[in-house]
Amino acid sequence: MTASDPIKILIIDDDRAVIDAIRTVVTRRLDGETVELETAPDGVTIAHRLEGGQAPWDVVLLDVDLPGISGPKLLDQFRESGSTSSVIMLSADASANTAASCMRAGAFYYLTKPFKAAELVDSVLSATRHSRMRRKLFQPPDTDASATIVGSSPGMRQLRAAIARVAEQNVSILIQGESGTGKELVARLVHAGGVRRNRPFVAVNCGAIPETLIDSELFGHQKGAFTGATMDRPGVFVEADGGTLFLDEIGDMPLAVQARLLRVLQEGEVRPVGSNGVRDVDVRVIAATHVDLDQAAERGKFRKDLFYRLNVVVLEIPPLRERREDLPELCARFLTKHGGDANMSLSPTALDAITNYNWPGNVRELENAIHSAIALRSGDVIGAESLPASMRTRIHGSRPIPLPQPNSDEQLTLTEAKKLVSTQFERDYLQQIMQRAQGSVAEAARLAGLDRTNFRRLLQRHNIDPTTFK
Image (cartoon, rainbow, N blue to C red):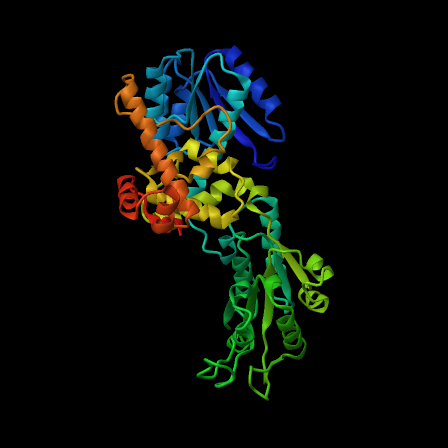
C-alpha cells in the first residue's frame, strides 16, 4: 500500500460519536497512507448501492445494531453481491456467540466497543490487504508478456520500464538480485521484447556445472577430446547462435573460464575443447548474479575486464521484503497457477502471516509456500495452519492464529482441548522437519528419531505430501 493507492473505508453506524472516533484514529494512526472515508448512518442506502454493483471500498466498518436493516443482514448482502470489500463488524455485545455468528456469515473480523486504537488500525490494514488480494484474484489474467513480472510497487514499475527500454538494444546486460527474485524471468522478458525473440533463448546456471565440465558446456568439445567425450558437442554458445545466452550466477564461474568467456565476447568466436578451429557466433549475453561483482573483482575473485564487459546495463531486482505491497498480487497469481479451477483464497490470518514474514527465499519461497498450502488445505479458504511453521510464528498484531475449533459452540473439555493442541503441534512439527529435510522422508525420520514406517504413517495421518517440500 502506498500513498498513491488510497485506502477506501466505509463506516456504517448510527452513533455519530463512534464515527468521529474511528475517523480520528484512522486519519492519525495510518501514517504514510492516504485514506478516503465515507460514512452512512444506516444500511438502507448501502444496500441499494450493492444491488447496483457498487462496492468500491477496501474496508467496511459495520455496526451490528442498525436502524432499517440490521448489520448481519447487510453483511449477507455484501457476501451475496460478490463484493471484495472486507467487512469488520462493530458491536457493544462481547458475547462469543454473536462474534462467531458474524464470522461464520463472512465477516473479516469482529470488534467490541469500546475498541482499542491499535486493534482498529491493525484490523483495517489487514482487511485492506485481504480485499486487494481478493480483487487481484478475481481479475482476468493479463496476456501481455510484461505482465508476467507481478507487482505494482515502484521498484517493479521501474524494472518493467527498464526492460522495455533495453530489450531492443543489442547491449550486454547484468541482472542483479538475491536468489529467488526471478532473474531468469527478467532475462526471458528482455529476449522476448528484442529483435532476437524468434531465435533461441538458452539458460545456463554457471554455479551448477562442475568446474571440469564448464568449458565443454559453454564452448563445446570434439569427440575424443577427453575421457567420456564420445561425440561432438556444440556448446551453449553455438546453441544460442542468433539468439540470447543467459549465464546465471556468473559470479561462481572459475577465473580460467572467465578469460575464455571474455575472448568469446570480444571476438565473437568459440573454440571447442580439443579443436584447432574456431566458429563464429552471434549471441547476446545476459548475465545474472546474487553477489556484488564489483567487490568480487576488487578481491581478485572476478576478472575486472570481464566485469566491465558485462556491466553495460544493470537491471536491479528488489528483494520481496522491500516490496511487500506486491504480496497480495503475487499470492493471487500463485493461487490461480497452482489451484487449478478451484476458486481459492487466503484467510485473514494466513495473509497476515505472509505479510509479516521476511521472505529470505523471495518469490521462489513464496510460490513454494502457496503451492504447499494448497496441498495441505482443508477447504477453498486456506488458513494459516496450512502455511509452513516458520511463517506462522511471525504473525503480529491483535489476531493470533486460532486453534482448530469444533463444529459446535459448546465449551471444550480439558481432554478435547489437549487433543486439539496435541494434533496441531504434531502437524506443525512434521511440516517443519519435512521442510528442514527438503522432502526426504528418510532424513526427516532420522531427525525425528523415528523409524521410516511410523514416520510415513504420521505423514499420512496429517495428509502431508513429502513431495511438496522438495
